[in-house]
Length: 181
Image 1 (cartoon, rainbow, N blue to C red):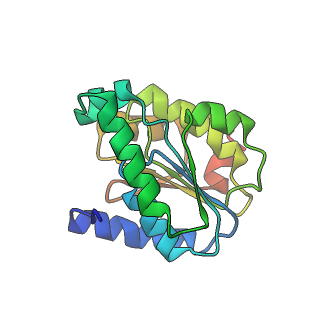
Image 2 (tube, rainbow, N blue to C red):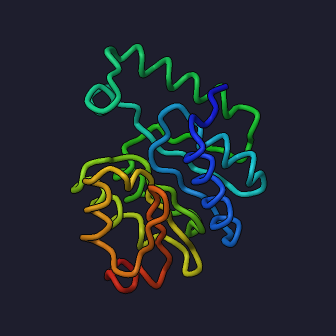
């Protein structure tokens, strides 16, 4: 099983855990990759449904992560499935997150974790699609705001958000201020 690589990641997980523990309802994870966060969320919140969304497409992962073949993506996907098998509260959704977001009709998520696109326009698009779905008492976290395009997307789209160690923290008040409610 893969483990968080750095003390920063552990610190981020501590923050996310504290924030998400104050909410109820489903957790939506956008961008799964190897499933590290998925498994961590499943262990921390065993009674909450978790929907982990990632299409595992070759083009995205080649560009950002250096995977060379679709077979690598299939192996990664199978690894994630095996990793979450012990957690019945986890549903893996192998689908484009925009398509899934448009057809999502479940309970309003109490927590959303954004870690899919790392390009400015992609993050903005994700925020505009998913934030209106967040429950009235929900909280969302955007990961990797230490990457300039991700941070710019948060600054462009949101007002009143908070940055903490590579995370952008968003609640419904921030959504309303940005016209995303």
